[in-house]
Amino acid sequence: MQQVKLPSAQEDQLGGVAEAARKTAHDLESFDPNASESVIDAQFNELSKAQDDLVDAYEKLSNAAEQERDRSTKHANTARGVAWAFTAIGTVLMGNRKKLLGGSDEEEEEDGKK
Image (cartoon, rainbow, N blue to C red):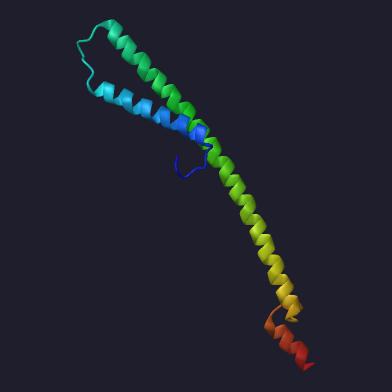
C-alpha cells in the first residue's frame, strides 16, 4: 500500500480493513472447536466480512496502482519526446543533419571527399 499514492482517507480506510483482517485472523487462532453453533456462525460471518472487505480493498488498491502506472507512462513518454527534441536540435546545431535522419559518419566523410 505504501508504494501507491492514495488520498489519506482512502489509505486510512484500507489500513482499517487490513487491521480488521489481522484481528479476525488472531481470533481464529484461539477458536474453540467445541464452541456452540451460534458462536461458529458468528465467527464465520466475521471471517466472510473480512474476506469481502479485503477483496474490495485489493480492487481499490489495484485500480489506484493502475492509474498511477498510466500517469507514470505518460510522464515518461513526454520526457522521451522532450529528450528526443533536444537531441534533434543539438544535432542540427552541430551540423550533423544526416545523423539526425539516420545517416552515419561514413556518409558525411564520403560527402566531404566529393
